[in-house]
Amino acid sequence: MHIEPGLISPAKMILSYATAAGAGAFWLKTAAAGLKEKGLASLAARGAMATAAVFTFFQVLPHYPVGISEVHFILGSTLFLLLGAAPAAFGLAFGLLLQGLFFAPFDLPQYGANVTTLLVPLFALKALADTLIPRATAYVDIRYRDALALSTAYQGGVVLWVAFWAFYGQGFSATTAASVFSFGGAYMLVVLVEPLADLAVLAAAKSLKGLRGSGLTTPRLYDAA
Image 1 (cartoon, rainbow, N blue to C red):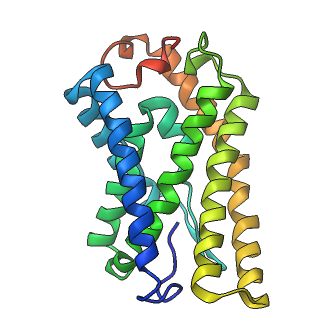
Image 2 (cartoon, rainbow, N blue to C red; image 1 turned 60 degrees about the horizontal axis):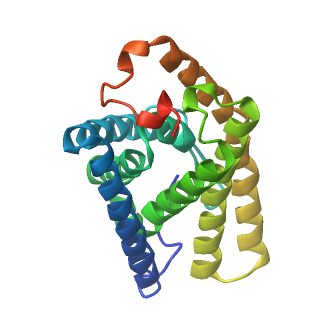
C-alpha cells in the first residue's frame, strides 16, 4: 500500500509530516510501556521480526495497483496479535522505509503519508482490542468474530486514510471519488483473508508453547492481561 507519486503536491505534503510525527510520538509512548513490560531485548527482537515480515509482505506477497494506490496483504492485525503494538508499528514503519530505500525510491517523498496510513489504524486497532477482547482471554484463544472485527478495523482505517490523502491532494471530483471507491472495494477484500490468517497463525502459536515467556511474542499472546 502506498500513495501514488504526485497525488499530493509538495506544498500540501507538510501535513503528512505533522501526522507522521504525531504517530511517531504515540509509538514512543507505546514503546515505553513495552520496555517496562518485557525489556529492551524483547522489544528489539520483536521489532526486527516485524520489520522482516513487513518487508516480505510488501515485496514478496502479491500486490496489485487499483485506483489511487495498491492492494497489499499487510496483515497488520496478525503482527499486532503476535508481537504487540509497538513492535508491529516499528516493523510497519521501518519495513516501509527499507522498501523505499532499496526498491521504490520514488515513494520516499510520500513516506510521511504512507507511514501515517499504516500506523494510525494500528493504534486504533490496539484500542479496539483492549475494549473488545476480555482481559481474561489470551490472544491465542480469541474467536473468529473478534479476529474479523480487528482485521476490518485495521483495513478500514487504511482505506479511510488513503481516501483522505486522495481528496486532500486532488480535491473532490468524480474521478477521484471513483478511484477511491475502486481502491476501497478491492482493498476490503483483504478482510476475507486476514482473519483466517490471524486464526491460523494463532493456532500455530498455541501449539508452540515453548514460545511462552520467551520474549519473542507479546505477553498477551499466551497470558491474560
